Length: 317
Ligand code: 13P
Ligand code: SF4
Image (tube, rainbow, N blue to C red; front, side, top):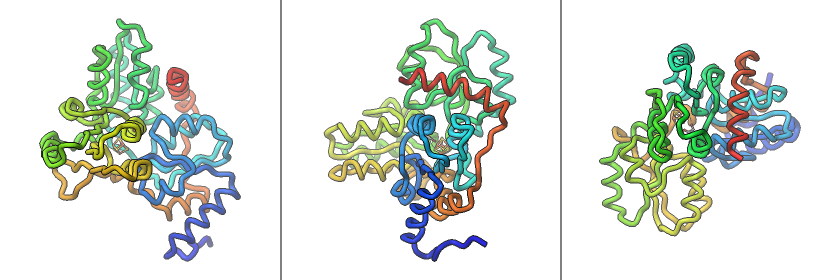
């Protein structure tokens, strides 16, 4: 029987992860919303776009995707011959869940003259009904490559869709979905914080509601917000996205102050994604040790979903 090596010691677990990684030629990838201790040991951390790009080019035999299920699925679709592991299969996504594949297919079939753009935060089954996948890091760039009069369906995040409509002047037809983390930030709480920190710049993820996008100094994906904070010269930032990103912001800019924005109904001073936080260092170790849970995607769906993901990668160059 496999036992956790002296599970009380985080150092031991880190050592075992490093040993197993070498033995299995594994790559540990982590999204910026992962717990600090996972970002610390990851070989690669990034936003959804960078994780997909990295999965597409790695020569590792095993990918451990520390994020949520759709990220594991995207990696598996891009690398069908590799073993893709996720630390916890319960790591879903409320945004992906707000788009039922059967309902989405019906919506698409009701608008046959539309190009279908889906956010990467969707199930493989939704991607299979999609023409082009996008992330928050490349959505604008991809939409702008389409002819101005192209009719477009955009799903499932209505806040990101509204943002892309506003910056591109398009009138995309939006699916009414949202993320339970980003949709819970309130203008009132951020305005209050801004009063107390007048020099702070406000960084907003486009999955947040429109009024928050409008007061932002910068709207962008996690990688875009991180890059902005690194190059900008303000001393302080109010970060309106899942608070895991603060780990890398503080690493990259130790001299600056990053303040997590609370959810509108929160007691605490931040806003966390319960799904992202399901992954722990111990679960990463166990996944590597046992070679499970493994991500598998129905081959027929995977074949259909690969086309729009590849189109995204080509259009992001
Ligand atoms: P990005 O890292 O692509 O900005 O995505 C945010 C997100 O909500 C992932 O679940
Ligand atoms: Fe999904 Fe929102 Fe969590 Fe991102 S933060 S994984 S969109 S539920």
